[in-house]
Every structure is written in C-alpha cells, then in structure tokens.
Image (cartoon, rainbow, N blue to C red):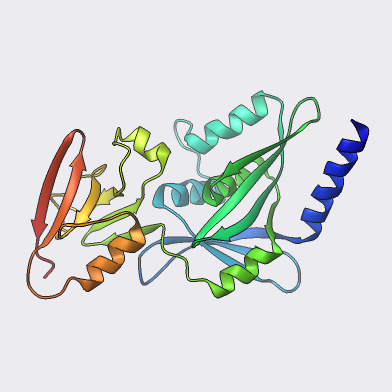
Length: 249
C-alpha cells in the first residue's frame, strides 16, 4: 500500500511539474460570435494566456464570483461548494489537462476527509467557477498551451438573430426536460430580434431542413444562408416539434 501511494504521489508530482498555474483575468466576448470567453493568464513571468469559450450560464457564475455578487438563493456552483465543504473535502487543484476536437477537458482534484485523493472529470467552465468559490489553484498542462495555439476552437455559445444559443449538455437537457437528441439550446431571446417567435429553452434541431448538432455547425450554416429566402428553424419545444420561419433583414 505504501509503495502504491508513493507511486501515485510521484505521478502527481510529474503532472504538476508539466503544468503552469494560471489565474482568471476576467471575461470577454468573442466579437465574431458574441460568445463569452474566460481568460486564464499564467502567473509566471511569461504571462501566457489561454482563452476558453464558455456558455452564458457558466460565464454568469464566474462573473458573479469575480465581482463578489451573492445570489439570493444558492446557484449550482454555490451548491457544489457547500457539498464539498460539508462533506469535509478540500479542493486541491483544478487541472485543464487536454484539448481534443476543439473541446477543453479539465479535472477536479479533491482531498477526501480521510486523506484519499478524488479525481473528477469536469468541464473547465464549471471547474473554474468552483475553484474561484473554494479559492483553489488552477493549473494548465503545458501541452494544452501548444494545442490551443494551433487550434481554432468552435464557440460553445453564439448570439444570432436575436438569440443566444449554446451547446446542449446532459445537465441542461435534464433542466429543460429536453429529449436526448442532437441540437442547440436557446438560452435567451431578444424580443425585438428577427427570431422573436423562438422561446427560451427551445432546442434547435435543424436549419433550413439540415440537422444541427453544435453551435459551430449552426454558425456555419447561418453564414451559408444567402438570398432573401426566410430562415427556417426546426425546434423541439417540450414534447412538440415545430418550425419557425423569419427573415433576417
């Protein structure tokens, strides 16, 4: 048992040695897509920066903690913080450990009450929001900096036609009671926008009859829509399928 523990400690040490600690330097907006972006800046002198595209809900959770704004009732990340603390665990660190297919991956490293280590898979946006609340360090694996410099990540969210849309996660699908099918979630609607007939919580499943599986795909299809023909969005609203048409000019 002691040998196994020492081996795990050695592996963890090598992982940390190949990482750089970063801090959250605020949020921005991608001007081309309207997507929130969280800025992670290396604490060392080099000051390398990693930009991670996130959804509007997660951006709000991060912004509230950065600005010291307390919600009247506990939000999801506040509840996560309370669970960690009440169970006697401690957040050791958050690790942004990989970038695959334009998607960042992170892990939460917790110390259990008895001293054991717990490692949980997490989206970087959720992990960052929790790290800010628990005052835990955030580190980025060296390889991720290199991958991010060579990649062009798809946005996780987008503002288009007066809609704010984001990729559908299992948690959001459960909250909005949406079926387990591909699509893009509508998280906000501008009343004066061209697509004002769409409702918050709708799932966009197709554009002009072509299936939509991600925000990046919706953005590409929208840019390819030319001429004066109305845009046709296929939606799933609750238990109903419907089509909304509108002109963009």
